[in-house]
Length: 112
Length: 118
Image (cartoon, rainbow over all chains, first blue to last red; front, top):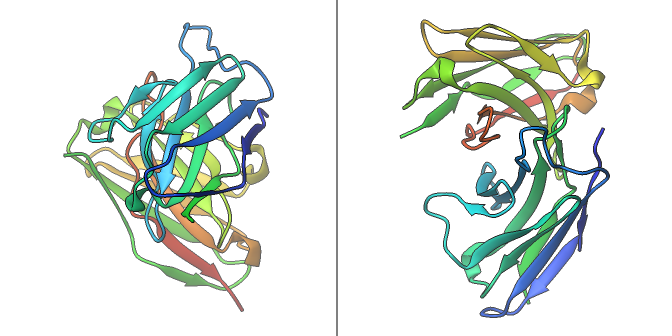
């Protein structure tokens, strides 16, 4: 199985400051169809996960543009340009290139 | 708008089975697959398996082989996940999620808490 490793585990951030989460996969996530199926999800306390980013860098509808995704191959990053109070929660990366689908362990974003 | 509405919470004894439903609306049910993901209390997300409502094909994670069954009813646009021989460590919130071939895991259900306790 592809292992997804996120860092840091916990990320205390000052309101209005940037935040960055890393996600590394144990093998390349480039699919034979040429796509890289790497998603980012936000899970606020008590809620279902919500997809923010798909195929590395595509923002889902309604997602604020302060969220951005980048990376390639085995190394990916989610950035929040200016953290707001509503961004508190746990963020997960997920690979959908290889079976079984696998998730990173999560990064908890909290306000300092 | 796309919605996935799951059945309510369940309490089961060890060794029993549970069947969770997931009713889809707002899109053509057979055009997207359904993945099931669970989350134990305070833990991360774990993919359990996948089903194609179009042809009934399934793909289960190795650890659930033999006690997991996923089905769909296209007449009601509903997906089902049945887990047998429940253990206490199966206590978790179970989510269904829409899953496309080129657009993996976008919309999620609200989750169903399954508690396994004697």
